[in-house]
Amino acid sequence: MQEQQRAAQSSRNGRAKFLNGSIDRMAAGLIKTKAEVSTGTAKKKHEAAVAKANQKVAETKVKTTKVTSIQLEEKNQKRRNLINIQGANLRISERLLIPNIQLHISSGDRIAIIGANGSGKSSLVKAILGMKNQTAVLESGEVLLTPAMKAVYLDQTYELVNRQYTILENMQAANPHLSYQLLRQQLGHFLFKYDDVHKSASVLSGGELARLAIAMISISEIDLLILDEPTNNLDIETVEQMVVGINDYQGALWVISHDIDFLSRINITQGFKFKEQTLQMTTYLPSTPEQYYRELLECDK
Image 1 (cartoon, rainbow, N blue to C red):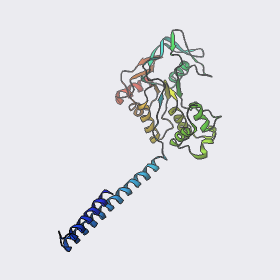
Image 2 (tube, rainbow, N blue to C red; image 1 turned 90 degrees about the vertical axis):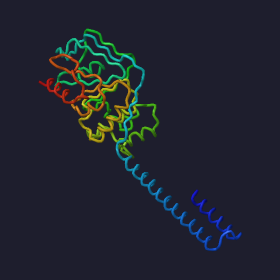
Image 3 (cartoon, rainbow, N blue to C red; image 1 turned 30 degrees about the vertical axis):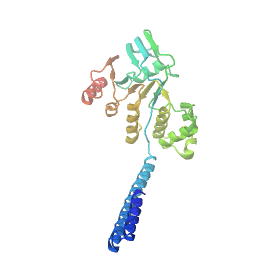
């Protein structure tokens, strides 16, 4: 518009000069031609800018059909103690699995635990959280959990997802305070659209259950997020988004995983290992993958 106004003014000035005799007809014609060329150039630039903007809009629409960013909501950002275990024993049924456990977790801590299959990694989590229908318990010593701590446990079978609920009902249960519109929007980010949200969770595949579980976590208010082999059923793109979401998350994080590439990218601050029926701190962290991998191999011996 500015270019058009300038061209029109230039044309008017040229005509005025011709009429008052300041310039001859040829000079006035040159001024008019120059103004018309300037207007045409501005129009072409404008059309090119519009085309570029339309292309960006189209590309954005394509991207919204894929999993977008996972935003994990922390319940409380203040630094505080969440779990303190001093000298407790982990027992499964009649079997003493790990004696004299020493473990302290505060908000903001990011810990990883490695160990051989069956060493007690998942059992320790279940015992601390007092989960139903499990035989692992902590006895003796001191076990202190902060009152009203909100912990979310994502296990390998996605028990977080209630199979009796629909996809939408699971999201509503994860955060009853969110509006229907926001829930549908978040489900859309995780590729659950249209009437699919009314499907029963019982018919979902392993990958779909993983996506729904992560979608539920993304809207939950969390003090402690516990991930048990979280990358097992995820495609590369969803793992990438999980890394981004976890790195934005400010609450406490506890990860059980053998995926060293994943662990090396989520800023683990403390490492623990189950070895020879004891819970020990690791010498290295996943940020030094080769050394950490050697420790992992030692645990499996």
